[in-house]
Length: 308
Picture 1 (cartoon, rainbow, N blue to C red):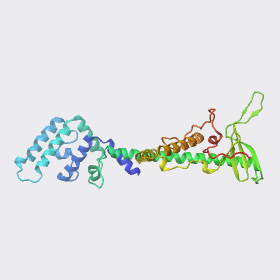
Picture 2 (picture 1 turned 180 degrees about the vertical axis):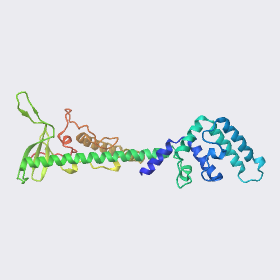
Picture 3 (picture 1 turned 60 degrees about the vertical axis):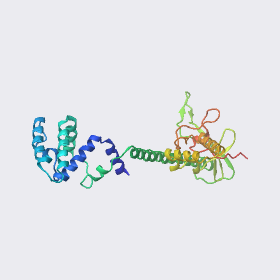
Picture 4 (picture 1 turned 45 degrees about the vertical axis):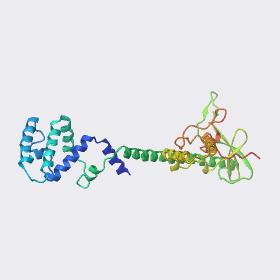
């Protein structure tokens, strides 16, 4: 994949004039012999002046003129190529481009330039490459975000159990309400008292761990709360799926239900956006504009469990 991407990038950067030079150089080598260059074919050094170039061209054109070589196979093509070579070397820009590749080397594959002359990416090829590249990068971001959120969920579960059961993690019957530090540093007030950082209210009830919301509801917290990466949530596949859904005529009610579910999930996790589908840094907020406890723990909102 990397080799293909590099090849596409090189080909896309090459200009039309460069392609003409590459083709012409390959044709001259095929017709005049391997290693033949524009300069060696004309019999002049690469430092030749315009006057020396014109003189060499007149001499060579007399030798290759079709009227002086009747019946010689390929003479017309050779004579035409000679005129193009002279035209390129007479142009300051054309000669500069040729000299660059003359000194640095021409792109070759399999020794003949076959792939270069046969495959030149058009706009569609470049667009396909960009779609694959951006979708792959988006998937990588999804994986990174999933690992980050998974780590946060595991941290809160571990810290909640430790606070409820003690450092030996010996299970205790019955629910235990605990406060878990959210990782923020504490601070000292003016009187020298230590003020801990922000904490999260949680409940440990047997093997289950819950986030305790301000209204007393319990939100189950486990590793499934982290959104795993998915190719279906990359932008291009999401776009295609959306277009297919519209074309196939899904009912507006089904679409509205799906949209509502997505909004609830997005507002709780602050992680998944409608356009790209991967996790964001912005925390979800409740009706008062405050971040929810579920989001701060790195999880998605799940069905609440009322306190018994």
